[in-house]
Image (cartoon, rainbow, N blue to C red; front, side, top):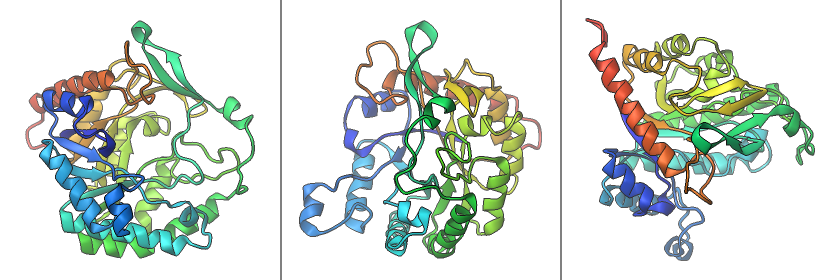
Length: 334
């Protein structure tokens, strides 16, 4: 296991990148330039084409980071809804994966949340010492307007995912890139009339049953899985038994899927050391990054959940857990 951090390419060379280097982080979870910089606009290259990606990887490396995960996606909503134009969107994903393979970037984190990504109804909930965290209240969300494109069923979304995977997995295998599905956030279905299929442990079991490809796997986002199960370490062992956990988001939440708040990494209901021990016992050797950290004093105007100071705290906490788990490893454990 190695501690990484989400370092958006637009922040290259800034305070966050410097602080993470000073904290001893050398692995990056990266993005691609969006919108394309002028050099690409003039050449016609898109962010997932080879030269923009080669320059992006070079930028991370020149700043002291190994780029191990791309956590950025070309437009995919037509593919998720099965609408005309989906094949062009899937082709863009295939181009991304081929170029990741050429450049030696091993993991792509994606999701299958239709029409919207992660949802919060508050980004300023008071937490420890005056810090703030994000939260979700289903009653607030469901009082909003209906989806502009209309409702869609889980069955339709499953069919569209299977169509997507049938086209993408052979390309990913040939490129040597593992694709890691992120859970729905929050893990509820339907949400605002939209079916969501990555909202239960059973959903992830079905994902792995669609194809036994060695590159078909999971981004284990602990906050979401915490809302799906009462025994997070057991779920890590269950889903990770066949080495299908490719990437980890390390965080915790308090409450239920219908009404929850994010927590400090050391202050939630989950036994975080037991989770680290579970990753250790299944032989997980990939990247793990903190996620949705508190916003601390002085961090005005930063995106909720992605401030620098909360990440520094999380990196130190994670490093301590990793060292503790290493010292308690059972004889014969992997």
